Length: 293
Image (cartoon, rainbow, N blue to C red; front, side, top):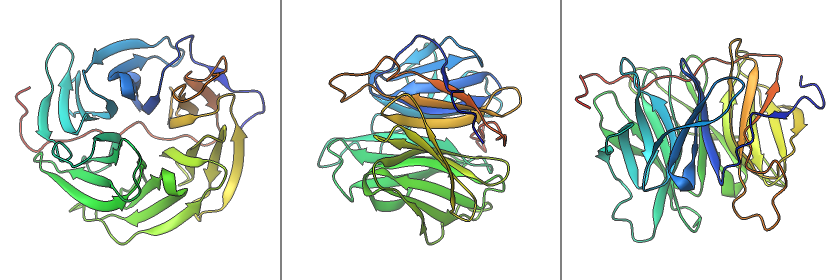
């Protein structure tokens, strides 16, 4: 459970569209997606810029064995990132799309693959996709027909993927084969009204946290899909979240000012609150070959 009034801002920074928070062995990382910026922070802040791109940056995951190297969902594709160097593109599946596209949220799974969603800038229904990056760097589109994919989040055993199709107000659940990355048939885990499900995180008990964009709340679901708790937050557009901190019991929440005619004092802030059940640090992308980057 969350104690009422326990939500605080990490610092004074306000982002246009905070996204993709992940707790790593180097602390918290997150993006300001439309500004193309990657930020880092300790448990108490402040934010510090790690790198910047001339294109949107949705989310990153650390690359195992390569400190300071990230795999990212950026621009129209997937790339490797390092401060002071241009991106090394693995693939740009949306570069030649008929309408403007960008990558959105992404995460590594416990088996060391990276998954990322794409969306049309205008949010056109059915235009979004989900891509998987295998250990050899191959990028494969595994789902299409999405609108605005967010998440993705995985159970600790890597056998279940949660994916929010935000514009349609639903959270999908798919079985995953950890050995191959093969995605099974999905089902609707939860439907949301009065807002859009956005970023997600799974706790140690298999519960799912979800930020609800436009509603100013967080949802906590039990593993069976029952909505166990609704937590109000002092921002209108909570976007991404992760569990972290030294004991894994701090829930970090990004938010956005974009699109608000009269943003409040905390819109765009990174929030933090204490929860009862911890989560694990972000998984890393584990390439099968040495990366010359």
